[in-house]
Image (tube, rainbow, N blue to C red; front, side, top):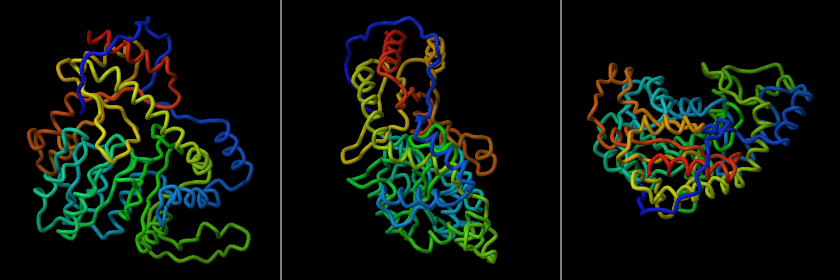
Length: 392
């Protein structure tokens, strides 16, 4: 996190009448029209629009395969299974993430081994990853927190040295780049989220990317009950009613209604990213000089997607800060409450406070501020002025 000196104050304003949420999706007439066309088409579930969305997303990322799913969680689940990770295996991952990252590890019967994060980017610390390895370790699950890429080069070196699988949780990181390449293009199995609050949304939904034909084939089949890869075509003209059940799969497919949103969201993605970067720069300039705040740091040779704009409150009560912003009709949140301190993980795996000191220190001070394309410059300046007033 970067720290700077005092900034000029933006003009104070009276509290807003309308609430400014932490996040609101940016949906335009193009998305609405495409959804209506899909409704009129008679084909609502997985079909031609889902396939088109997959092709375009794979092209955008620069990867061989993109498989559309109903969530990033589904992607993580199928990724672990595709790499044959199961009972007794250990997976090293950060505790500083959403529940589904670790839940999917547990759901395949593996053991989540939590590693600490770095102080600057809040992504998994490669040094601690290597310290957590045992003979049972099969994979490292990295999380690109808030849209900032994890240190993939160091993680890959560790993985090659110890013959480990690397899976990337890119729920926050569509459009992020690491050393000039988009997240998802590394060849690792990577999972994206298109939830309502994400940079690109399909309401609910996700995408798994890979260059591995075997992994892609496994995911294509298992996202729809484990039946033949093109079984969705059986109700189309020329389709066959015959199919084979190859696995005991799941109901993880994306629908054409969701893909209808995704097609236009993808076209607008670079525009969304530019706005997020612009607004993050305004926050950086004004908030980075305040005494009580540390702003997000971007490591050289990375591109931050700014799904989140998290600040650290160094010497000010977080609860009081959140309450004062709420009084000014500004929404905030905390990303995240560490998983190793959650009741299930404490009881099941014996984690306790003090196990991950950096994660715990960051989690006690972090606050996410509103940042999304539907915000206006007046909204951004209102947030800045409100924070300056609170912390003066």
